[in-house]
Amino acid sequence: MSIQPPRPVAPDRAAEYVARGYWNDRRLRGGLEAAALRHPDALAVADNRGALSWSQLTSLVSAGVGRLRSAGLETGQAALLITGNTSEGVVAYHSLQRAGLLAVLLDRRCGEADVRVAKQSVPVSIVIAPREEVVRLGAAVGSTSVLPLEDFSVEGGAGAPRLQWEEPDRDAVAVLLFTSGTTTRPKGVTHSINTLTCAAQNMAALNCVDRSTVLFLVSPLMSITGVMQMHLAADQHCMVVLEDAFDPDTSLARINEWGATHLGGAPVIVERLLQAADARREDRLALRALALGGAMLPRPLLERATDEYGIQIVRVYGSSEAPNASGSQPTDDRDSRLGNDGAPTPGLEVQVGSSEHHQEGMLRGPGMFLGYIDDADNDAAFDDDWYRTGDLIEFADGRITVIGRLKEVVIRNGFKISLAEVEVALAGHSALEEFATFGVPDRTTGERLAVAIVPKSGVGVTLEHVLEHLRSAGMPPRKLPEQLFIWDEPLPRTASGKVIRSRLLMDAPSKNSVVAERIRAEEGNVPEPCGRNGGRK
Image (cartoon, rainbow, N blue to C red):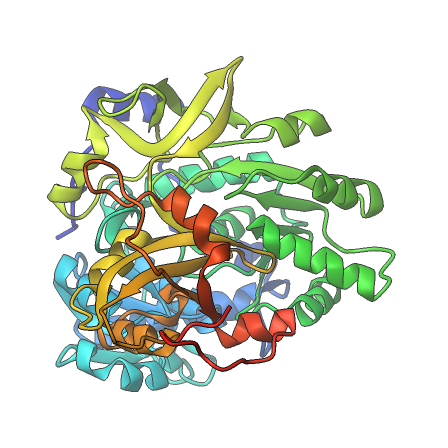
């Protein structure tokens, strides 16, 4: 039995989406399988170890469905898929869709706490993950059945039966992924095949994607960006190149090696690639388009990308809940691309002003998510059937401009880290009198997570003490702070007692601090003896 959306779209609007073609009856077989019939030997996906043709990919997906059925999984059940940017991850994802299973998605860098949240969100029948990650996450995986991700590789699929499968219900919940948002725990975002393919179609239009496109995926495969690119590649019959560990020099080489034409992600990724191109004196790049979001683009980056390398910048505004909500149009000039977040994609409705703030942006449309898996999250996220984005926006002349955000998050390399989630994990640290998290500008990652602490009298606290406490709470590495500030006075607060994070950032340079090894290495800092409270200026 299929899992139905936690917040079904009103019947009249659903009928309108169908009538206008935003939602359709295109079969999954129109994707991978049709590409395999038309272009069997053309390359479909490449990772850091090799590449698969459309014929190979389709055969492995068919075998993957056989693996799932042999494991006793039936339509409507949930499978937790944990993977990095690998071909096996792509095979497993498409196999889950064709088996009619709910794909619950986590990146391979997840922690035990993430696994526990996923398993508490829905009844998970099986965990699909690399063997080494199953060992690492053993306590959280517990007694749940495991199917090794390696079984979806070329070697693993060799002996599996190829099964016929029925087209799944396009309106049922097909994907559950997690976003930190602003709550104390990740929120489960639900999408159907209809919402995902609609959003992918919008992405294709914004970026002028066709069969000649070669996508380069740096963002996690199990993020909304990764899911969008898997659907985009399948629907447009174009290739996707997966990068599991970003490095400016090696990633730039792979982009040119594979002739990758399109890249999406945080602006800091692009800045580092262009710096690498300058250092290597590259006079050309394969890239034709950059789809960027998460921070307003600096004009020098725009000018360098367009003038020096002939790359088109596509400004995109979206989230896990509202992928590709708006974006630059193919006919936009440079100033339009720099000055705002683009026009709403087809079918998207925009309203400015919510029950909480007169400039909070609210959205609804055919590419939007179908609600959070937890009803408690939905209560706070919707005004009637409008999704409250938590972003402050202006909407004029048919263009969206994001001017700020209500949500308290740090965005590191395009990944959102909930300050509230980290602070809840810090609660109970016996050496801390006060603490608060905030964002600090970082030339490599855009922002880095910092924590300000007031130690209890006579107690020394180091960054490693704080990190060890967070690790023991199940916090994954990508959510850990990279700088610790020692406050020698009470933290700045409002009259109601709320910490003023802007004051933390303003006052931080005057405080003793210690940074993570990554930052010391990049800035050429030499470790110094820690001060009385374990700080280093």
